[in-house]
Image 1 (cartoon, rainbow, N blue to C red):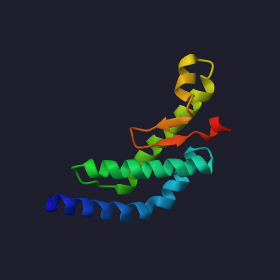
Image 2 (tube, rainbow, N blue to C red):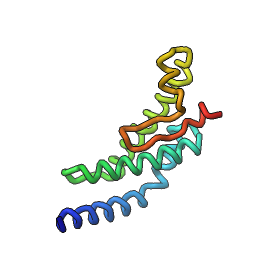
Image 3 (cartoon, rainbow, N blue to C red):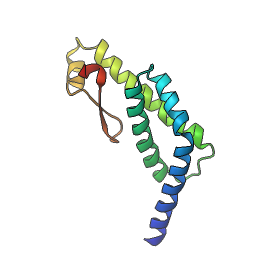
Length: 121
């Protein structure tokens, strides 16, 4: 139990040090990928942080390039959000799309739900 607790503490410490080092870089990437929408970029960055922290805790192998690893997670998340947004906007005449988009939220692998500002407006 103590070893597991120490490992969790070590993982948290390493994660937050690395996250803080690359947070500004990742925000600017999100801003670019989210087509300049700062609100969606901030939401995506927060979700990417949660997802990366969760994945790091489950990862048994060392991460050789933390910046690349974080960038990949963040990019994939941004693309998922954009796909969701475009699906809801383009496919709104489709009954399935309406059901998917009816609650204006996106759940990304159980991490959290975000409001879709495009649909909320």
